[in-house]
Image 1: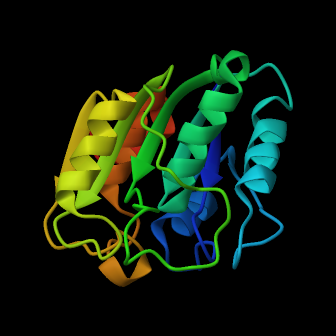
Image 2: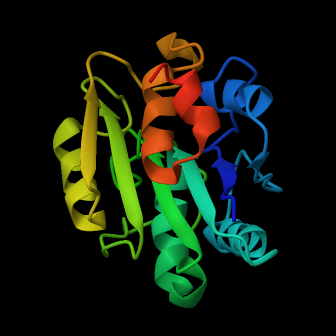
Image 3: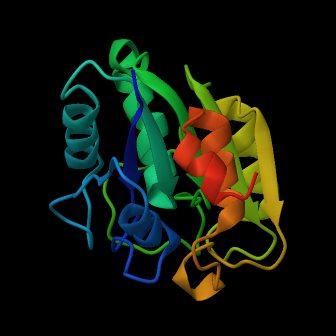
Length: 190
């Protein structure tokens, strides 16, 4: 049974040059979870939307999160532990620290940061100069969530379109590690 890959953008969604959008265009079977409010999101609304997508059918899922969506996954898994059993793995990229002063205002319900272990495999990716999370806090999140790996990128900012990653082959390789899907294996140049 093939894994469904859900793309979970963070605050303000992911634009056309973001690696998430590029992956969605390039690979078959990837589906973006579209939230009703990208500007001033309510955690409860985002959790319900994710839950609906994960439980849409019985196929296992992999989650590809950016920024605020990393927090979303941790909160959702805490609220719906049975449904979380359907998750094969999660790629948690640039987890924003919603408790930091640098975090943009306007979100509701995403604090305190969830620090419970995730009930599925995860890989966390952080940058040495992310304006929304210190490397120290990213390490805390990765360890608390039980990530099997913390991949650190040097000077990649918020690991978004401005980071200039293009299709981001390293990320594709990490996604292959989580899913075993051959389309990612080939694209990552293995």
